[in-house]
Amino acid sequence: MGKMPVVFIGHGSPMNALEDNEFAKGWQDIAAKIPKPEAILCISAHWYGEGSFVTSAITPGLIYDFYGFPDELYGIKYPAKGSPALALRVKKAVKSVKVKSEETRGLDHGAWVVFYRMYPKADIPVIQLSIDGNLSPEEQFKIGQELSVLRDEGVLILGSGNIVHNLGLVDYAASPYDWAKEFDGFVAKILKKNDVEALFNWKQDKNGKLAHPFEDHFVPLFYLIGASGGEAPRFSVENIFAGSLSMRCAVFGGLVG
Image 1 (cartoon, one colour):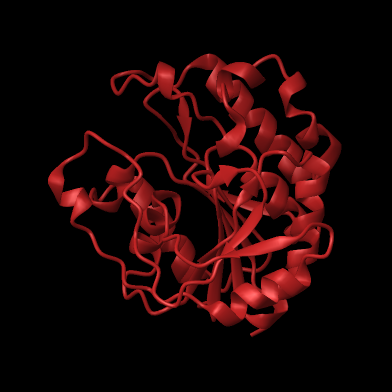
Image 2 (image 1 turned 90 degrees about the horizontal axis):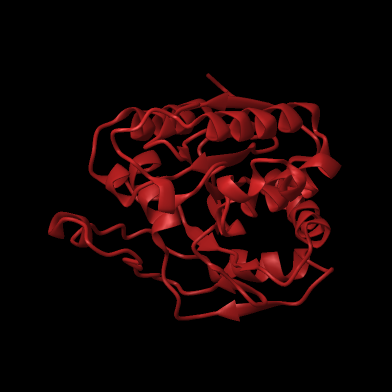
């Protein structure tokens, strides 16, 4: 199979699980253009806290970690298997911090909404690694570097977040805000240049605080850039939705289509 790519998905609203929109179609296009994974390791903005944990359930359920949406969304099932073996492999690969098993947690919507559209057959095992908010960007990057060996084993490392994520300023009728376009373009440029230091120091950008009042949706990038080994990204779904949500996706490494 060769080395699997590393993928960042701008996941946006949970409604992308139901709506046949440009975002879901873009995710499906990415899935069609990369090799089918043996398994998926997801790093989602919606599992952010203290410590590093990996899911080890054989049959993870779904976490409907949102409210105020149509009943149909809460009825979605995604019966992908977990992989205790891959969870153990992750624990052995990461040496810079201790990774603990989490046996009861299911898949949050940063994971299952994306995979429901990318791999609707639910025939690929999925596990998640938590984001440790106590770690520095450099330490999160190091974990990504350690995880990169999984790419040679058919594992897709996928981060789910948003390059711009300010829910407080969401306006479904709004065009992209200028500051959102500027920050999205700034991050795209430094990813293309593999300017790791600029990425680590993103909060110094004049639009950083507006783009991310809280950092959870940005942090998956640190893990992914570590895992990417400096490979250049190819971008897709380069839209900004509802004024302040960047849906930009990036694929680091080879594409087959």
